[in-house]
Image 1 (cartoon, one colour):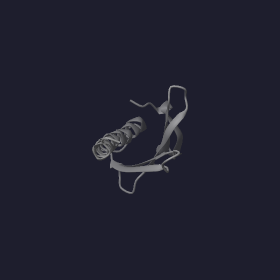
Image 2 (image 1 turned 90 degrees about the horizontal axis):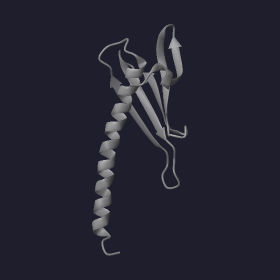
Image 3 (image 1 turned 90 degrees about the vertical axis):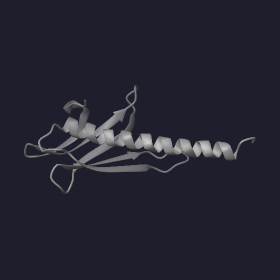
Image 4 (image 1 turned 180 degrees about the vertical axis):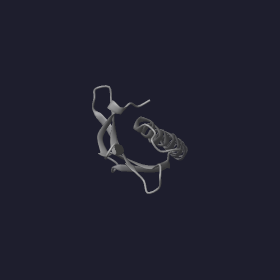
Length: 112
């Protein structure tokens, strides 16, 4: 579970946290991506945005998730973990889809 110390750039309105970031780093401490969390329009709603840097062959990828927590006043570590879990589940779907593309291309290009 994520802890308060793992969350950066925390923004407060009084005692209530109204925004924070989580930066995933590799084993050498190099940032892999940054997830930005902000409250949504509805009660207990949070919006998470993740931008993956561009590569030589692909432009930046932006992922945005809006989700509603079951109640207010939950620890922000749990709010962050919930958003990141949605991202992880989406990545699994995306990997499966791209594996399907790879398989189809392999069939088309067989013998090359």
